[in-house]
Length: 387
Image 1 (cartoon, rainbow, N blue to C red):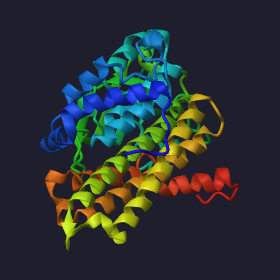
Image 2 (image 1 turned 180 degrees about the horizontal axis):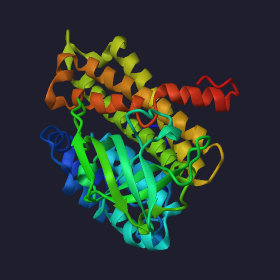
Image 3 (image 1 turned 45 degrees about the vertical axis):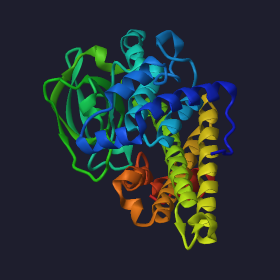
């Protein structure tokens, strides 16, 4: 289906490569693994071998040397084939971006090639039960102990840690914090470290990427686990948070394309009273409206990726706007696609209803729509802070 986002030649090649691989597996494969609690190792490995997991990572560390614009193409195209892949956003995008920007050369050499080719996965731990959207209130604490640290606390809604061999962990740094100023540090912690345990959170989300609570009970790490500079973690972590928002926009753009494509096919084929239901304006106009909103979200997402890649100061605003607009559009498009299918919209064979909750999640994560509105009101419009 044609859209407003015009790919450059390189992007068309990436999109075609993703589409060919995704088509061989299909949306049913992704949904089946999600229902069964399985993983998508075969698809992941093939994407990695094709260089489609590290397109944005440095060439010298096994990546493709591109940026967020290239990552958007990959993630969106996967979602457009019914594969909204959270682990892509977490391991290559968030973790890969933070390590590429702030890790030591030794840590980059050890981890980035594996992240780029898919042979290594790393989860990301920042969310906590009591901190909400306020990263300043992270309570998981790292205390200096000899030449390393001891970490204790709890993280919540940590995606896909069961698939990962390490966790990029955001902690309050006890030795750099004061009662007036809380400082954060980031550590790369093995998931098999003594004292680290996980518990799955049962949710309605049908996805191979499950959600977990992570418990850290006196977990010891050495000096090699520190990422970047101790006490400077908040600034460092935003290297990964803006890509996260951008690629959630990409997932939503893909879901919107997937939903509308399925609805259009059904509306053209399903006949009532002798004509296709798509001939009725009550169906056609709603789908046209959703299509336009999805395209606006895709444009906003690609714009935010280019702003980020060019290092512009407005990239944070653009990333938040993209995430907001794209997630709202995707949810509306999916709802209308289900409505267009009537009762069949809830049947497993049509692959729509099971995408509802993962798409609804994007309204809340990685930052809620309300916090995006707060950010835009305060930062973009200069209105008084409301919280």
